[in-house]
Image (cartoon, rainbow, N blue to C red):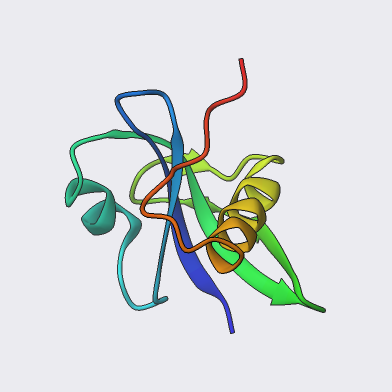
Length: 92
């Protein structure tokens, strides 16, 4: 089952993946948070690995090659840590 995602860049430069159901629009989700949209598309879980791809017509942005890794790392970090919110830093 695919889900949609929007990759957000927070004020401090950290990347935050926002995943949501297929029936929602990318633009509606992006407008709910006052940050910069970096990319968007769909995510799939294949053999325990997250794969991101596609694009968002409502935001006019595409997925990026690195999105799969960012999303995977975000969830792996969340599952192995009980710490509070800690978004991933943006690579220069």
